[in-house]
Image (tube, rainbow, N blue to C red; front, side):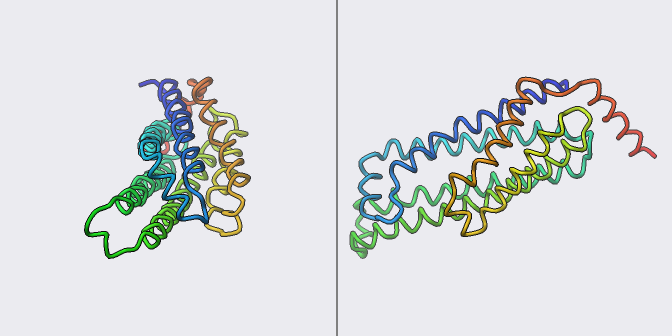
Length: 233
């Protein structure tokens, strides 16, 4: 595969990750009422199909991010193979955390069913447990964002050090990385819509650049050749 093809495939996968991730976020915002367990339970039962589609959307988005990770690793490998591999590792860990956290999204569907073994819980208790598991899922998602932040920091640094992509894209990715890592701070979590904006700008900018422009193939090959010579010395 040519470096231009790898770059455009990376941009495509990254952009599709955003597109497929919008729907689950919108569904969560519509169905989950942060401080009202009864309303949340009612919404989930009334719109179970939408809720399940949202979970599927998260898994599809994660799959696209894995693809983007692998292609971007190949694109940035000529800059520094070890650091590119480390950045990809952080991304894959984040994807694993995100995929596993979807288990918490399935728990409410079990608790809200009228299974005989759930008779030991009152309705209020089951509704409270539903909201609790959804909050745990949110915390797990924030943990995954930290690993994605480390990935973005690595990608941003490699782009800044590269000769075949504009440094401004690398700077935006560095800002995105700091943004995602900051989600460990409770103060930032209360400002999620505003805190997400810098991260989204950085990642969307990179995905569109890779998809439309790709890389300067001649400079990519020159930097790849220089690294091979250095490794052989």
